[in-house]
Length: 361
Image (cartoon, rainbow, N blue to C red):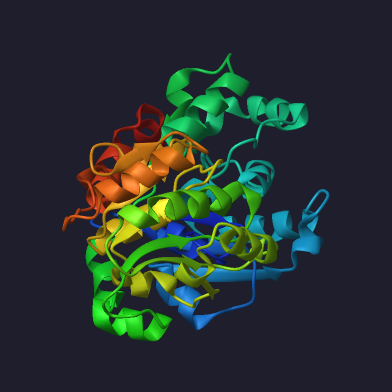
């Protein structure tokens, strides 16, 4: 076995935001003696995912989601083989399925990172993690997720259920982002318009209906040429288009569809609005801030924590309050990503967790 100390990072997959999540947690060990091996349970080998993981080694198990239902014995055997070859001190597992596999397949201490609400609604899951409480530290991506977990696991030491907010590599994101002019040209938006931006799948959870209603109410008070640009696709597109037509703003609402590497174009927006009714964190808010765009967010769990002190919060589902917030942002303004959402702050907080210090030595 190698004497080099390693940290195992076990991810369900690298789709959507989870590639950057892997990068965030690998970055926690920069400047330390630890090397990071990132293992993806699902997904075929991918050069871009390998580079984006920012890890010393990346392993793709290549399972299909259907293959890891039930007891997941094949994945457990493979993980045991990986762990047997090196001096792994710790496993960081994202989402419940990798936490489950890591706890059963290894004897490593496990940092389980939860990215969603409702993970412990099932009694069986609460029973399972409680069996392994002595070698498990649970992290929520927001205080809202953490507090929900503590509510489901009241017998746990609160220090075993903590918050580690998602972070953003500000310089890397800004290096990707194109200029306002280039972004508007790419998205087909007029250069002289005042644009409210929104990014997210067209799904009830994202509540773009309130967004459209708030925009329609605010439009007479917004600068001339006001537009709402919604980046994303989903099953509600037809009903949202119908709503915009009923409110008389169909000509001012642009449905941009799914845009590859959408955060590159955030400088196209004059203000960014997130209206979700169920947001564990809200990474797009940080990406908008990195572009210098003012942000507005519904009081929706983790999203409120992201914009607190730097953006505006309005009551969930209140279109009139959203309209007032949009109008308040018509003056030139600019924001920056708060220090608490940077890699360096995340590293300091992570290394300060009491149980983690004991495990890493």
